Image 1 (spheres, rainbow, N blue to C red):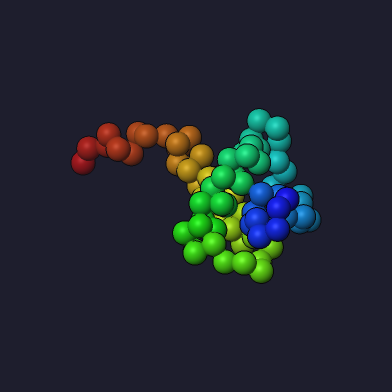
Image 2 (cartoon, rainbow, N blue to C red; image 1 turned 30 degrees about the vertical axis):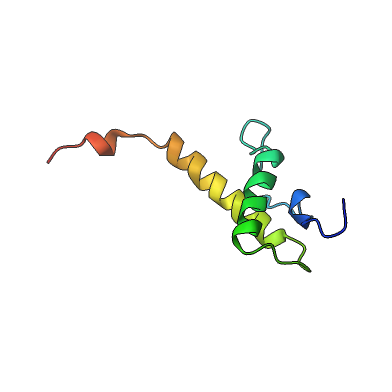
Length: 81
């Protein structure tokens, strides 16, 4: 990595949560997380001196919310009272 490049390109090392096992079919590709984390880092003004883990986790959470919303049943939209 070049000097001055954001650290958001690498997944932060973290202890996995056994209560939420990631499977290959459920895992969000790291490339998508990295791209969104980079966007978040840029939106914050591209600060230097950080490891980027906050942007990484925010990007991952955002993408997981989007995935859940896309997978949610849409029957509520059609309900009539």
